[in-house]
Amino acid sequence: EITAEKGGCSVLLFRSVLEPAPTKEEERALQEFGYMIQLSDDIFDVWFDLQNGVETLATQCCKNGDLGELKRLFESQVGLAKAAIRSIRATKGQSGTSLGILHVLTAITRSCLEHYERLQNVYHKLPTKRREYMVMDMEKWGNRLRVARALFLQK
Image (cartoon, rainbow, N blue to C red):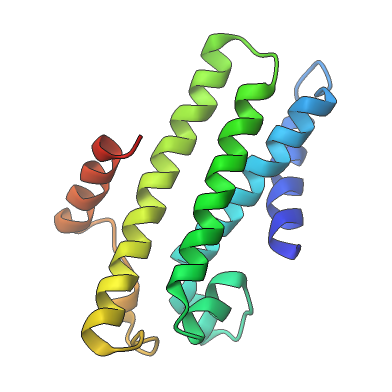
């Protein structure tokens, strides 16, 4: 609930500076999209949050070794965000931009989750104390190529 509220409110706050005011359908879509963005951010920040004692859905699932549940939650939210964006009355360009951003963020997050799964398979649990393993540095070409692959392979 906290993840959904934090992400949804953040996106709605930025949207509130634009005219006209969002419709109820747009608010719902922005809430779902914001939740997905926040969940992605929490997945990216697992190592940092664990080091700082910050409890999130992602840190809970990673500490429990339940990456399947984290993946399920993320994929469910991707579906909800896509459906909500498609349901609003917007120009093709506006909804296309939103869906494009969602597509890129989904690819990056899926790559991160796959990285965590590889680590868990090798070490039998996530090496949460090892920054060099847990942080998926996007300056590394291998990580960039994984994301590019995910961009082209996902539906």
